[in-house]
Length: 146
Image 1 (cartoon, helix red, strand yellow):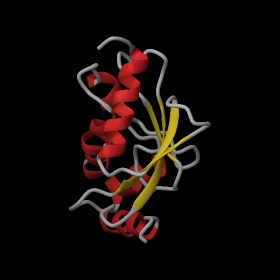
Image 2: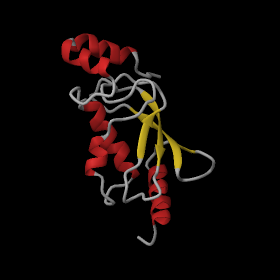
Image 3: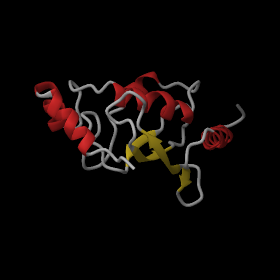
């Protein structure tokens, strides 16, 4: 790859060509929104969320920053800020990955396999461990089902 900016451009184009609705901020490629559908066979199936993505200057050598704009009830997502506890992205990220991987692998994994032992939303984590049926009702009640 000739440069990080060229790679950023290619990854953005690949994301847009992958049927994701992408909305750039200030016509740049550093920050943008992506419409994300809840993964099949998860409590979030049928929901649609607006995700904010910020690419660091060192992208693809440093992982993107990802956060939910649309409210979601999940142990690993901060309820107020939408910040995502994505240790998985930060720890396993390498330049081999691209933006499509975030939406086809990392976020679906997060929603399919919440980790209540490393919460950003302590209430959701406690409820998930204490009373799974009530947790599932709460997730479905707070999902963005269109």
